[in-house]
Amino acid sequence: MTIGELKNVVWREGEHYVAQSLNVDVSSFGSTRTEALANLKEALELYFEDAPSDSASSVEEPEIVSI
Image 1: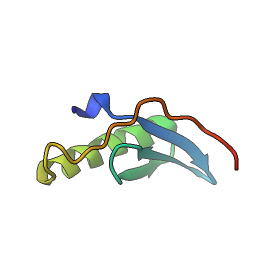
Image 2 (image 1 turned 90 degrees about the vertical axis):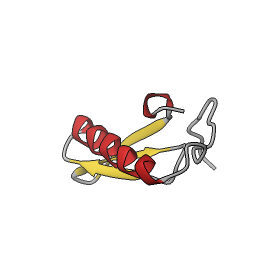
Image 3 (image 1 turned 30 degrees about the vertical axis):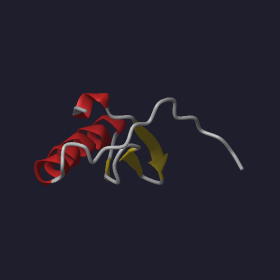
């Protein structure tokens, strides 16, 4: 699985945007949505430098639901 195949979410939290991968436990933030996603991409690249290639779980169709 490549970084481009990972499923990610981004949302606004106060003054920042938070970006989080759904496939691995990695997240980041930024002042804008674009910055948060760029920071997440960098964090994922660093994560996968040391992680086994099969460390990402498959996420098919994520859905936001309220409980």
